[in-house]
Length: 304
Length: 234
Image (tube, rainbow over all chains, first blue to last red; front, top):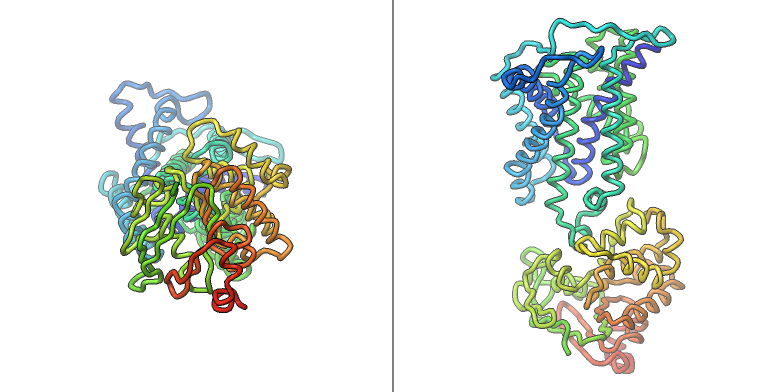
């Protein structure tokens, strides 16, 4: 059981990277980005392309760090893929969501267009890589470290936790300390007042998409390192992402973080009693329960 | 010298004209009040001056510069700030962060200006790291005015600063408006609370049904029985 909880925290931390981006975008633009899961997929596959396609060609050696399952190739690929997904998500805003916004389209139209964007991403991945499972480094099973309470954890998973934690701390400091971070929170609070204060809200929106996309991309890569890559991976993440976001109070970044950890743990622990195939059902049931009992989320009001 | 002039403004929402052919001006270091019954177009006038609404006819000049049709984020850079009647703060940000957002377009060191704001509103200073959403109505109104003053504007537009305040706070807010005016800021204030506002105003305009029906010095309007009966509630 203790082991399942630890695995749940690992899964939850990956969900958190997606959920935080989803909640930031919702906080400012007030629409449900159904393409957010597929941005995670995009991150994972851009990284796959770099690690198995581009970097070997550049002659970056296929070494591994200590007992981790990856090395320099992934260390370079990780930030580059994050930047690519950030760019892709800004691109989608400029060509798709922004024109709709300027026309005054409602949140339903925006959400459906995001659904369309999610199909586009998934189909591109299917065309380029096919529907099979992929691994960043096939065939290596690294020995697990055994912690007290007989918890077996792989070094990769410890690194995943450290990576997520650093990204979250980094984002927290960005939102608290920098001018753009404060402007993002101000815009989420009151976009009209942000405008009359002279804040360039279009620039704030671009930053929000960029950060949301980069975090989603990072989440996708980390899931690929932890488990595997599949064109439908991000789509399957969508339900836990939304459940985590709603659980934490939509628009609330810290709520999304806690909600994601709850979702991760709940999904993993459920496998002790249910078949693992029921994991999405667990996410669904939790989401329905929250919506019935406390639709405003556990942290109430719901502002970042 | 005129710092602001609105000429023959007609504007509204959608197809409907709310404001019809209204002209007002603001001289340097004046407080000018705009009063009149509900739905007279007072807030619409401020929003049109500040570029939130596009005028259908007419022009707005700030000092010697035509600003008609400019967006609010451009106008704010030219030295005019606006405090909306509602939703005029960032509730999840601290007092200090609200003031910093007011200075968003400044690239210079504005710490002196922050200190001036805390001198003007001393009760905000001790709570500078408190979230504004947790403050009382009067304190929120001070944060809202402080935010608008961070750019050291020539002209300040206030939309019903005393609305939804407890009666004992209304006088305090009007005192603050006079204090702000003494630092050299010219102010247009839209108010329901007509008598109190006219007392601190150099001049006033009375709006009704979207038109300007009367203008005079604050004192003269207060003493005018006919205007009093018709528009100031007896």
